[in-house]
Length: 201
Image 1: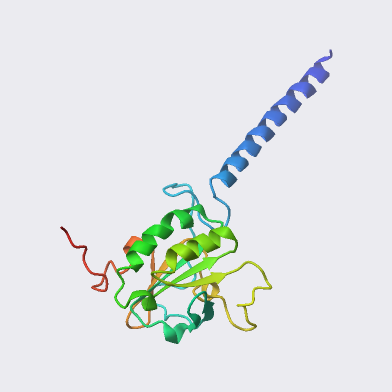
Image 2: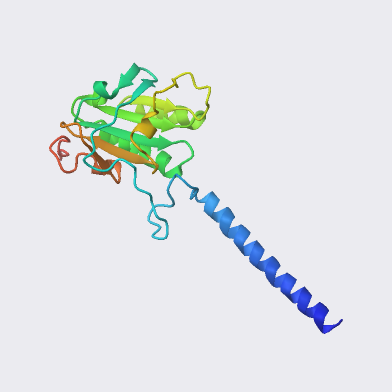
């Protein structure tokens, strides 16, 4: 075998190994749920989590949606203080954090009339999330299907109206109608008297 042939074979072997390593890294990222738009693994400092488009202090946006059990709901039907949780069926942290949101939502004064859970997606995961959250929140399912009968021309989805780009997301609406983005459900009403202190036995 000539020197040139040996060099070509070695270069091809190195390129093949590099391609394999890149493919394995991509497969691992997808398996960890780190696809665009839904955040990355919790606690991973290498993952940059985007900020939602409505800044803290912005007025709550106008929206009109149809809830699963309670019919139409718009911004006028959501008096503050209120909490809105945004979940996606393709987001593992959303499914993991939904029970915590349900526990916090159960403590919001005014009950489920002051809590909305928005689920983006469809199928069994959407149904499971809706079943979990319905006792403590008015549930909106934003199906990925463009033929979704709840969609109406000219009316923004709740997740679009609130400028949601990070999943899951939690938004607190104050009595003044202004929003505060929260990092987790446990942060909802953490700076106000809206949520009662836990009772010890």
